[in-house]
Image 1 (cartoon, helix red, strand yellow):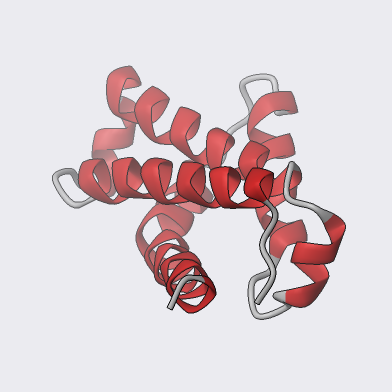
Image 2: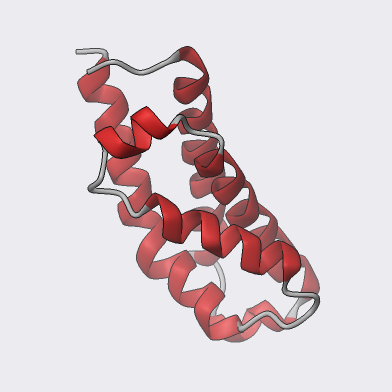
Length: 115
């Protein structure tokens, strides 16, 4: 599998910020998102995951359709341009149900590329 250096860096960014989401989400409840520190940490990390996904090459994204890259990028846009209209239920669901499988998929892609 061919992965450009810039794609590799973006994938490691996705891993790093996914780990942050998982760590914080695993230590709080959904209602703890009302605490701005928890929400800001998770929202920023989700935003950064989306930013990194958006910077992946089109070749890479098309070569790895098992990940819904466009949905990840759309989440980033919603967080950045939502102007205070964040849906905490969506943020919680993404953090607890979608980020762990995304992290696993990205780790698998990286392992497959260098084994």
